[in-house]
Amino acid sequence: MSVPLQIIQEIEEVIKSSLRKKFKTYSPETKNMPFHYRLLGKDRMALFSFIHSLNTTFGISIFEPVAEKLAKTNFKRAERQVVLGTGISQKAQTEIQRILNELSAGTTDSNKAEEIEKIRKVANVGEMNTLKTVKVDLLAEDKEGTVHLFDIKTAKPNISSFKDFKRTLLEWVAIYLSKNPGADVQSYIAIPYNPYAPKPYERWTLKGMFDLDQELKVAEEFWNFLGGEGAYEQLLDCFEKVGIELRPEIDEYFEKFK
Image (cartoon, rainbow, N blue to C red; front, side):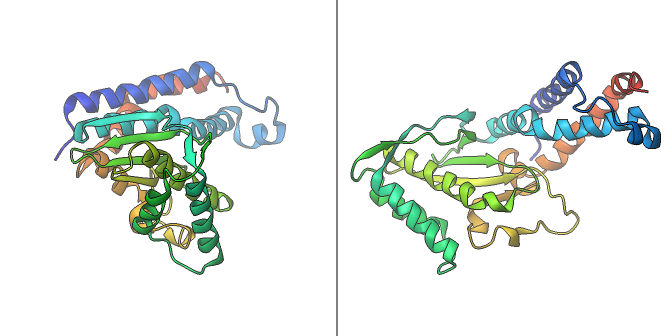
């Protein structure tokens, strides 16, 4: 299955507009690095700084809108930056904390299906509290009605934040089930590319806190899940095509830093 041509063109436009916008707004953080400039040249240092800056905005400016467009080809609904709600039951919060405590202590392995059912039982039990949790980067509802919630992370998430990531995934489930008690809802960490390729992604860093088979989608696994088999390779081709097309603009932009 291939991604429709119209979606490919829309994805290419997302990449182009994001890069051109970055050219207009980018300003090197450090104005004077005399030793680096003498050694490498201002243009190379500007390029390095630009790439670093671009990496920090890739998620919202490129990966999220691209993921939304791909998902709309296979899912009946796809939205990004979704606020699920603010209501969560006290019992659900207590259950989430208990799950996290057990995972942190290593007394149990994560089983997402079981965790969801435990939360479902208490999603509307007791006092409802107001909780401001992070927005869902991408919500995709498939044709069977299952709702998939994605938290799109950088390629190498901060290990110290894994517990917070897990809490977010469980809180999303609790909030969604409080309004839709019988729903089939899944939540995931999505990592757009594998920085260790061609070696497998180092999933062991997430082991213990996450159900790796049910909560993590990396590179091809993520993009092909949204856009169908082959979507990942087509997406890489889009980036390559845009890079070739914009190369004169990119060269002209960095020429001024020489």
